Length: 170
Image (cartoon, one colour):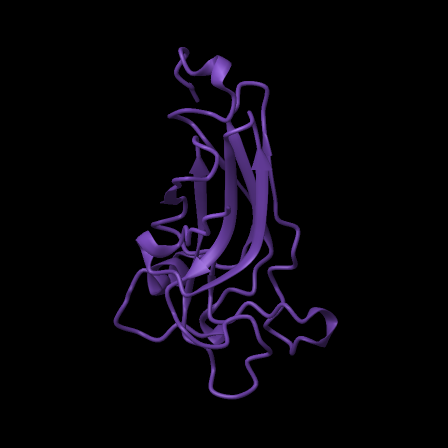
């Protein structure tokens, strides 16, 4: 029997893109994704009414074989993208495919999780707009950047039990 669990519920995630998963010991795994609480066609071509959303990088981790998950917004003060994330490959209209899809997740020898993603919102202006919930957030507000970014676990349990007695250190 499988129990499906929506790991985006704590943040009201309604759209997700670029999921990546890594496993450690038998009952431990982490799941990285870009997510937004905005509803609508978040991964389409954005040819009609522009998608209005702010995307962040999320990590969900289980230590009990998936019976429960702990999800964090790993980019809470720094949005990864504003507006649509077109996932239709080379058919995406100009200005909608800047994030590429070079996302990845891995684990080091101590069980720390590392997630890599492309950040499309890197200037102070874009970040400030992404953190302002009273204004629209469309692809036209994005920096159209393709900055390689890494999220690194620096505390808490890792994905290998044999390191639980030694707290993770940066």
